[in-house]
Amino acid sequence: MGQPTKTPKLGGVGLAANLTDRCRYRREIVATERVEGRSATATITGDWLRCRLIPGASPETTNQQGGRVVVTARAELIVGPDGVDFRASDRIEVRSKLLGDSVWRVVAAPEVATTRTVKAILLRLERTIEPTADSAFAS
Image 1: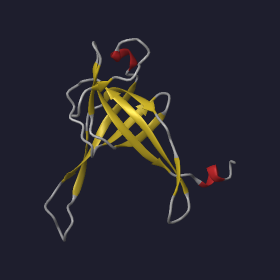
Image 2 (image 1 turned 45 degrees about the vertical axis):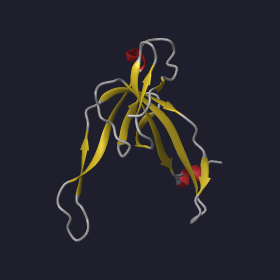
Image 3 (image 1 turned 135 degrees about the vertical axis):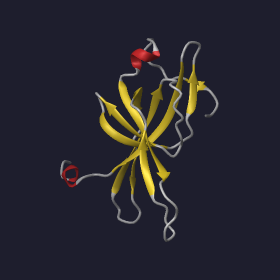
């Protein structure tokens, strides 16, 4: 975990009251020995934890090969200090009442966020949203 950072504003109430979403990690592990130059992997999932997903900027970029517009959604995830060892290589599955269900990539090392009374884990997340055929005709 990195250096302690300041916990994002959560509305002036306790951390537990603000953790209204659920999340768990998905981690790829090597399942068997290498066969023909490839390692077989398996996905393990952690237990569901209370968390808070805070959406951030979602800039649009144009793909150089196909010229397609791709949106990269960014967010921060606050998780209580439950002793879970998050890794920068994890994918995080989030169930949010407000934002729906989604899977995110961790893009930076987890940080310990602290204030005088609150200690939490802060994860910086990202996911790519590709436009569908329906959304192309909506404008």
